[in-house]
Image (spheres, rainbow, N blue to C red):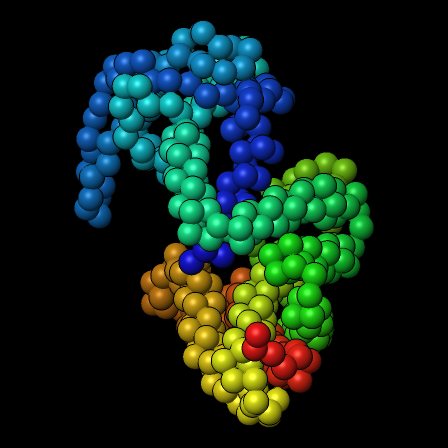
Length: 372
């Protein structure tokens, strides 16, 4: 649970510090974006869709509260004959993101794009950090420090080099290993079990790496199935290796999961040796392996459900499209679905192989515990 929250917290920090919409107003090619406050709801209409279900459209009077247009007032005409994707219902006092487009006739068109949720998210993040530090104490503080360093490495090292044209796969491999080394040593300290954990990560990552390379080539994945690639393709003077970017994503995702299972297994081995220092390495391995099996079963299931949940809207589209000739075989062979299958299975194989590797290294590499 904590690891999943830290992943979300990382994404939030990235958007908070590097998204122009969240930090300051942005003006490019006739478009200016800023944060505004809803001053008045001038009109509101509830409509019914042809297939059933209701939605609300509103006309809003807005005051800009950021950027060069701060203090100016705008009118957003949200009531129209066209149903837009964003069907939020706003109240007076809500803070929203606004895009203002200037056409060839110098007329401004105002769009409300989304709620400004950053303040609420910050409150929740602050509460979690306080609770986590109260419970985790010194180790919790180390975990937060490692998160900050991970954030810095990705922002200052991995992403700039990828945008500069370097191979995203190799850059992510180097950056991911650096992150893993720093995280393990910060959270666990400079000791034998930390060295063994990093060694287990390298072996497990090598397995994941080989499988990723083999099956992305066998299935001829291009890395361009995700809709985000469309936006990247539209950017000028930007040449990216999308297959390398796909492999990089698989690699970084695997590193985060490997950290969990490997550190947990080596910790389990250490505690077994502490409880009974007379046990042989073979017996310790067997006992820790049983613990790992339980952990592994829940983790692989979590991986599958995470990927399935993220792809749920897409899966629903395929189910609904079966009547139009899109059968299961064709759906599974589409690149976007094949990519998720390979990502899930390769990641799961990496996690499954990491468990016995970490257990073996811990059982035979950790010194016997001596009671004092």
